[in-house]
Amino acid sequence: MDLAFRNAVAKARKQQDGLYFASLLPEHLILDAFGKARDLWQGWIYTPSVTVWVFLSQCLSADHSCRDAVANLIAWRLAGGLRACSAHSGAYCTARDDVPEEVCTRLTRETGCQVAEAAPADWLWLGHRVLNVDGSTVTMADTPANQAEYPQLSSQAAGCGFPIARILAVFCLATGVVLNAAIGKYQGKRTGENSLFRTLHDLLREGDVTLSDRYFSGWFDIALQRQRGAHVVVRKHQKRATDFRTGQRLGHDDQLVCWARPQRPTWMTPEQYAALPAELVLRELRVRVAQKGFRCREIIVVTTLLDAAKYTASEIADLYRRRWQAELNLRSLKAVMQMDQLRCKMPHRVRNEFFVHLVAYNLIRGVMAQAAAKKGVEPWTVSFKGALQTVHALLPLLATTIATDDWCDELLKAVASHVVGDRPDRIEPRLIKRRPKNYKLLQHPRAHYKKQAA
Image (cartoon, rainbow, N blue to C red; front, top):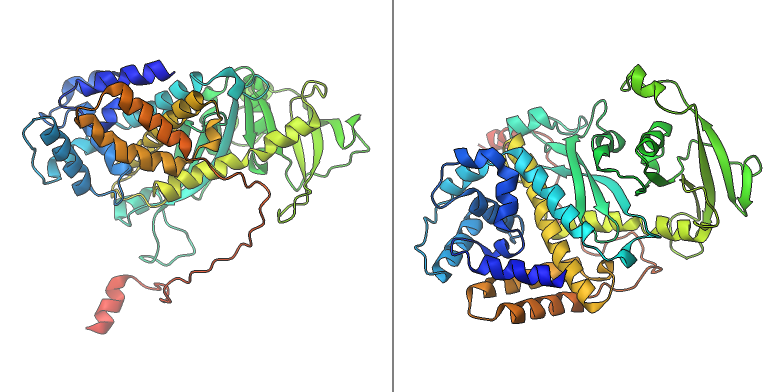
């Protein structure tokens, strides 16, 4: 793993027209993602690879502006002895607009799977690849085009809200990378997180274990995953009754139960419905939470891992507790990388911006995995924000005469030194100390208030 990283950095340094991120995302991956579209590309400075690299730098910059991204390109070209390009961002925005959506989604999958496949075997859970599934929301620029495709909340008055989209990410539990993701409307039929996840089921492989909250505990969600050979560990939905006196006892608060197949939902074809079993044999476990400060005192976990000897109740409980990593990963994306508010003004640009954020996130996670493997620790113990700050600071050194091996050693050493505090049982009130500015909420479009003030 470490040797491959060094070779990629060494190769990227030889590219005179590259950017800092060429060392993390090789040019051949970008060109493969473009496919035949690269033959139609028009651009002298903003080639497909340079455009993607500049886009990555924009998603990881402090202010996310196009001007800052172009300034990074100018700095790199000057450091490499090349002529500076125009400081105006128009050419870059035009090139970024021409990037096909399939390129960004494919780069997300490939950068994530590349890191996950290279993970050491001892990072897996009992030999299984665990997929941590969770969803969230993002807002975007308030333009007519964005409002038409991703409408704002129906409870908000026109002109007083922002277009909102629902997102879903499938994280690799071992490395934290995004293996695949989906984005869709926030409201309406088949816009829920479980509906988005069904569009990503091609990702599932035989023996995978999906880890998710009770939103994904429906009968058909479990059955469709089992149909692909994947196992499920999920919290039981609160509307399903639980009685540990009725099932086949496996241990204390541990039993096998049968769930009968419900009626066919409208979104499923008769052929798909007929291919599913008449009932599911599932395992139910009660997990008691002894730590103070936790919101839940006990939860019921449902799983298709039926072998109580191989998969003990305590191991299932510990695995479900790690589901919280998905929340932390989403926080890294939305808070640390500022993805909670996307800035593009057209829907297809918004989707590209979303997926390029995921690509940038995967590249940072890849460096964290390299650093963790080199130090002999698990990647989830390494700070994402610390890794991001370190990469930002050290990537420009590629333009200097420092030796590649020295650069790689210091980068990985610095990343691995930023360890996440081990605070699993801390008690923190859900209250904040800092007060926001005491402004009233917008009740009408801004033009209404301007007309009143005139």
